[in-house]
Length: 291
Image (tube, rainbow, N blue to C red; front, side, top):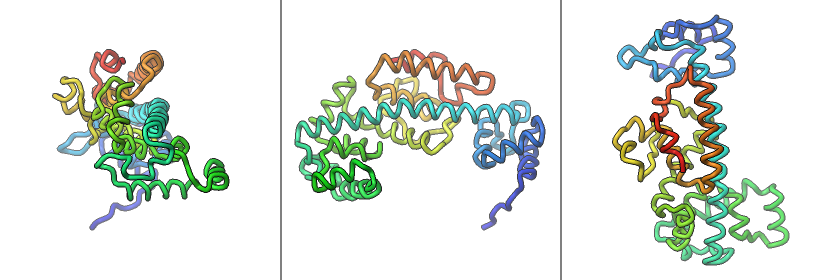
C-alpha cells in the first residue's frame, strides 16, 4: 500500500493551487492558515466545489479566503449548537432521573427488572463502572463513597452520564417512564428515542470539532416533514438534524427568540461565503424550525 509522502507547508500551498485553488492572497497568508489548520481538515471544506470527474476545485467559484471563511463559520456554528444541545442533555438527565426514581426508587437502576426487554443490564452496569472509575477524584464521587458507602441515587448518578448513556437510559426505561417524558414534549416516545440518537451524534460532531458544513449525516431523524424525506439533500443535512433538536427542546420561547435569531445572525455574518443549500436549508427554514 502506497502512503502519501510528507509535505512542507510550502508544498501544501503548491498542492492547493494545483488542485484548482488559484485565488490565494499570498503564500504567507496560506501558510499561516495551514500552520493552524491541518491540510487534510481544511481541504474537506473544498468538497462542495470539487469536480467529481477531475477531483479538482472549480477555480471560478473559490478562493482560499472564501474557504477559510466557511471554516470559521463552521466553528462558530458548532459553538452555537453546543449551547442548546447542552440544554437538551441536562433536561433529559433530570427527566430520566426524576421519573425513573419516582416510579421505581433511587437505586432501582441496579435491577434489570426495572427496565424494558431491550435493556442489556450487564453492559449498562459495566459502562457505569467505567464512568464512575473515571470520575473517582470528583468531590461528589468521594462524598458518596465516604458517607453513603458508595451508593449513588439515580439523581446523583446521572451527573456522571454521557449524553449517549442518558439517551440509552431513556430508550431502555419502561414505557411508563418514557411516556411521562414524551408527554411534556408533545411527541411520541418513539420520536423521542430517535431524536435523542440524532442529538447524541450531532453533539459528538460538535464536541470533537467535526465538520457540519456540507456533511451528509448517517443518522437521520424519523418523522420529518414530507418535503425533507423526499429530498436526500435535505434529510441527511444539518437542517433535518436541527428539526430533531427543535422537537426535543422544551423551552419554546428560548428556542424561537434566542436560538433562531442567533442562527440567522450567523448566516448573515457569513452570507458572502456560505450557501444555505449546502446545509440542507430551504428558504422557509425559519418557519420549519420554529416551535
